[in-house]
Length: 383
Ligand SMILES: Cc1cc2nc3c(=O)[nH]c(=O)nc-3n(C[C@H](O)[C@H](O)[C@H](O)COP(=O)(O)OP(=O)(O)OC[C@H]3O[C@@H](n4cnc5c(N)ncnc54)[C@H](O)[C@@H]3O)c2cc1C
Image (cartoon, rainbow, N blue to C red; front, side, top):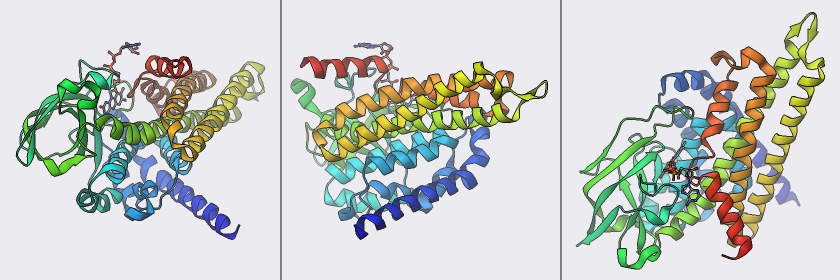
């Protein structure tokens, strides 16, 4: 019991520390980074200084070995102030988890200490122009050549593309074997033949540096294979779906909560004809819908995260459900915040327009909502 109490205290401290970083080091730049589309390096450095990525690295590999519940709480706190930073952190954690779960001892030794402190930034490169959400349809090819793989192809919309030091790249090593012929490689930014396009001018999540990635005869050491050859989708399942989808759901949760906080404060402070707008039933209806949205997102995310921590075989399906529900409801909550705040909500100075634009991206990020719905239904139908 004492042990449990200590653990709760430690968790509360981590959340408190994240809130402090968010307030003191991320808030001051968040709006400007969004407007200019600049990468939030100061935020990433602040996260690295307190080793937030180590939170979910196993204790055996020098981390704290925390589960998805605390991970989601931390991501949520970051997303309340800057969803872009939260997404960059989530992508970074996905690479770290892939190495921790499936990397060789040498890769763990070489990368985990740096990733834990954000001394090296990680990213994930799965999707391609012609594959969309269907990771099984990628065509980036890796051919073994002695002690290396020669990689050719391209990836698109890579969060932290061109900014990150190391990329978890899904490649096809044996086209004959279909889904069993895919593998994951760690590819570093300075590899000859690797280049990046311009950052996309996006509607939201504007600081995340989404770039296309071009791999032209990149010679990647064979020791950078993560997992065995043919295990690419398994590695992606354990890292991107197993952790990244919970991070994505938590980003939506953070955006929804921040939208609610802004709307409630505004409804109390804004007076018209001597009365705060919150006295009106129309405004109250909007706020109560938002409260229910936030609370159901959080409760459902916690349920899915706890189930995945307890029963690893449920990790993918629970991740799909949590991401689908959180991302769709967060858009409604952020939209209602704009409504509560009227014209003010539509202006950049009040942040909720940013929250709405950011929320919109999460239904597209990795698997779109339609794909998630299909996957969830197919699991029930045993298809
Ligand atoms: C903010 C953001 C960050 C991202 N970060 C990364 C990253 O770090 N790394 C990375 O690899 N990728 C990243 N992506 C890319 C993302 O994974 C893809 O955008 C996503 O998989 C959708 O692919 P698409 O954009 O090609 O859409 P399309 O696949 O063209 O889909 C367009 C529409 O068609 C529907 N559709 C297509 N095929 C089917 C089907 N078979 N069944 C039902 N509906 C279908 C979709 O649901 C959607 O409504 C990011 C995307 C966003 C928006």
